[in-house]
Length: 238
Image 1 (cartoon, rainbow, N blue to C red):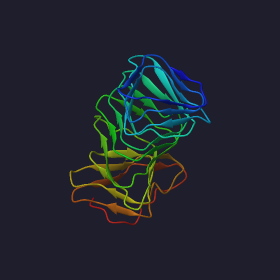
Image 2 (image 1 turned 90 degrees about the vertical axis):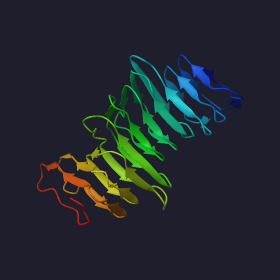
Image 3 (image 1 turned 30 degrees about the vertical axis):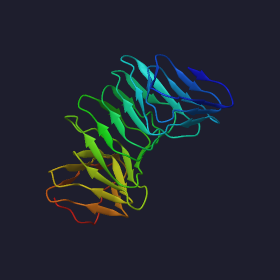
């Protein structure tokens, strides 16, 4: 499906299912809050606009790779990777709602990502870190990693609006994390694992609030080839 006109192409009713590639080359593509399933590559090219509304975009290819390039105007609302194949970023990613990886491999391709809703990695999936992952919502959202060995999501930032709080609904592994708003470790025995390998001394920076819960653990497993790893002064449970 290609939208090449300078005007607006709008979904009126019902979900849209694209078995091949989607290319919004110019103009405005208005999803009008409807869900979109796509089996091929996604391109929202520079100068074009994607208006998501309240819907979800599902990337559902069962084998091989899909590439997502969203270099134009407009963020995704909800985004789900439900295919058993690989979804690879070709540009930075901005999701204003929830992100769910229910199958397959998500390859960040060293690109930045912003998530304003819940972030969920289901059991059996693979998340390949890259760039900086920023949780920038305006309310309390959950982080869930249901894989057996918790996946390292790389460099993380808790940012967003004044009311933003990310609450762990599982353990979490990062290289480094900066907490500019609130990170709640909850009270369910979860571990925040700081696992960077490299010449970095400060693996957690807190300018906002770290809420330790009642039985959480902050684990400093990072190694610093240039010296020591610093333990940040804050309140820990263990």
